[in-house]
Image 1 (cartoon, rainbow, N blue to C red):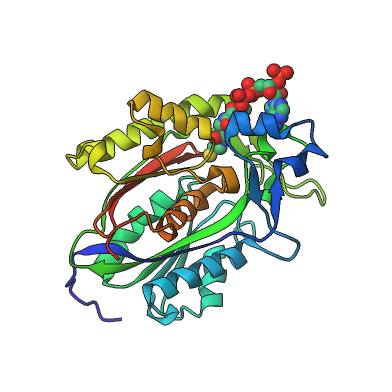
Image 2 (spheres, helix red, strand yellow):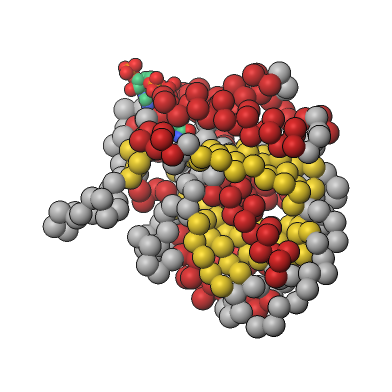
Length: 330
Ligand SMILES: CC(C)(COP(=O)(O)OP(=O)(O)OC[C@H]1O[C@@H](n2cnc3c(N)ncnc32)[C@H](O)[C@@H]1OP(=O)(O)O)[C@@H](O)C(=O)NCCC(=O)NCCS
């Protein structure tokens, strides 16, 4: 295809959508099968319920639905897309084919490339950062979908892990723009710390017979202080790089892993908790879909005005961390 010279030097979010499975699992539902209580889960995490898929419902199904809603919101057709980026760590297949390809195919995005990106729960800030460059360089709409079905990767007898997660998908459509909608990103990793959240489902672990998929193993206690420290650092880096104070940012949309983590970040930064958007109570941790689902909920609530500055911030397995600075332009 002939390369066109960039005419619009920036990218913006032109559309956003999300999809949560209909089935809701409350903490009370878990009391029957686990030695836990609604009171413990709420007081230690802020979570009351999560959405989970039912049999026959898959990661790509949630991703396709979120993508359709985002395309609709943007007024962009699937045929116009130049690239589909899917971020997931719980895709339909282990790797092949990628969930990005399943989504591209189901949408009929016939002119788009499709690529999967996995930086665990930090997937969305990473994808948005990378999509920004492609959108501008190729002057094309780019779809970023974050879709997760973590419920199928959990040991439902491990009470310190399974209570934390839920399923869902969020998507945004980026289009080239005259003014900066996606302003900046901070992306980082500490690959020496990956042992605290792993899933032994790779070529390092050859299958024994017909054993089923391995479950997520997590040392939540070790992740907690990392999460607090790194979220504060990402926020401070984004502010400093862009010569901003936090009170010049209208919305902070953090990865929803544990309400107490976000409370601790607010405390350390000496800002009211209200500066952070929270929806963990009814969605739990949806891994990479957490930030776009929260952003979509905030947008649908009418709280975001054109021109508002928004910070996203996340962390995840790997270990990874990152965030974006956006100016809402729709
Ligand atoms: C997992 C997490 C909720 C545990 O909370 P915590 O306050 O650190 O709790 P602890 O691990 O200290 O456990 C305290 C006690 O509660 C128990 N407990 C753990 N889960 C429980 C549950 N669901 N219900 C009841 N009791 C539970 C523990 O067994 C422990 O009991 P003990 O003292 O008899 O050994 C918390 O550490 C956390 O959220 N960490 C971050 C995880 C994360 O963000 N992961 C995703 C990364 S993207």
